Length: 78
Image 1 (cartoon, one colour):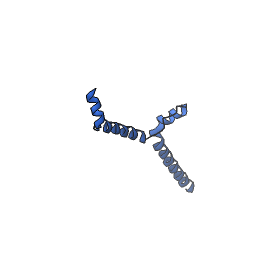
Image 2 (cartoon, helix red, strand yellow):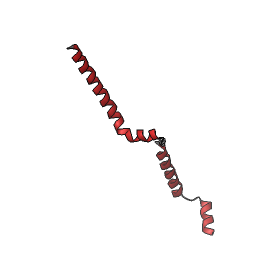
Image 3 (tube, one colour):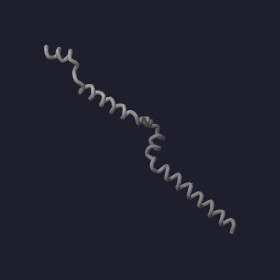
Image 4 (spheres, helix red, strand yellow):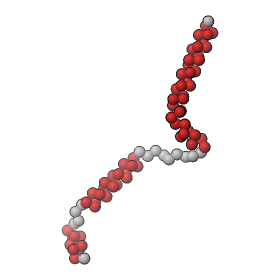
């Protein structure tokens, strides 16, 4: 009887371990397979998009700023 309980406990623990590993590995299996074949993935840079957006905003602000008076006079004479 004790042997049966021991087998049931260890079988349940094994099933839980397999379920936990499966639930964490299954969503990433494409990535794991690519890494296993040697394809290097691009590094994660979350701030790169923010930097590009801020540069676009800065350029738009610069383009929208009024032209200084001496330059506007030069443009008018040209």
